[in-house]
Amino acid sequence: MEIHKVGVVGCGLMGSGISQAAAVAGFPTVVRELSQELLDRGLASIARSLAKFVEKGELTAVEKAQALGRLQPTLALEDFADCDLVVEAIVENLDRKKELFAELDRIVKPEAILASNTSSISITELMTATRRPTRFLGLHFFNPVPLMKLAEVVRTVATEPEVVQLGLDFARRLGKTPVLTTDRAGFIVNRLLIPYLVDAVRALQEGVGTIEDIDQGMKLGCNHPMGPFALMDLVGVDTTCYITEILFNEFRESRFAPPPLLKRMVLAGMCGRKSGKGFYDYADPKNPKVNKLLQ
Ligand code: 3HC
Image (tube, rainbow, N blue to C red):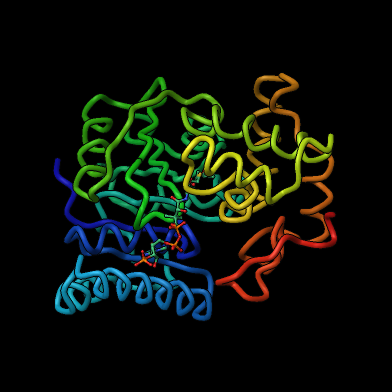
């Protein structure tokens, strides 16, 4: 089997990036959102991102137009019927994802592969919503997808080796370097990243340093492109907290326990860049200032 046509469910932060990468790589790509407004927003962010690549000379204007032309936006799941691979990138909610996979399983052809971009929900559990355990896997991309070079390919105990290979090849076609991992909460990257991020919150609360100094420390001291607080704002404070809870539930180890401050920020709607405020205030997005309310 070969992958010719791709489907992406969700055109938010991750879904738009995956759709963009697939379209640039030459795949006709069906992308679905729940409303026209969400679809338009996602497509506009793809167009903006492609424009940046054109500005930098990494894509031509023609290639940009061709990529946009390969995208088939839709509101209907039925449009995935003839896709060879469908990647789910909707909200991180187990029940909603399972409902979606059960529906997709009825719609897409039997040999098609279903994949989830979940950062932390068990791939095996999502697989149980379908009747195709051997043709189900995780394809976990990183934010911002158009720039980040990694894709985690997650196999379950039931994934056929051919499907794993197709997942690895697909990631490479998208210009990503795949790493293969098994279905354990957090896979490789979040298993290691999340304890680091939540430790930064604990360090802040213990008065080890300010938000700015801790970020600066990790940027200049370890050559990270951004410090832990800026990174949580990029990923989403809510997403970080959610992944932390899943890791804690799986391993019951205190290093994964979500710090109370993180939970309170989520309740207060301080979810990072997407909500305009997190550890930083993005009133002027090009010049974020530390969120004074947290000092
Ligand atoms: N599309 C195209 N171009 C983009 C872009 C996008 N979506 N986002 C940023 N860029 C471009 C900018 O226009 C800029 O171009 P320029 O050099 O011509 O000005 C360039 O990329 C660099 O962007 P910025 O100047 O805004 O900022 P940085 O130099 O800090 O780079 C970054 C941004 C690539 C996000 C970098 O800071 C970085 O690599 N940060 C770490 C990201 C990371 O760790 N991601 C993984 C998170 S974990 C995850 O996703 C897993 C999940 O499960 C939680």
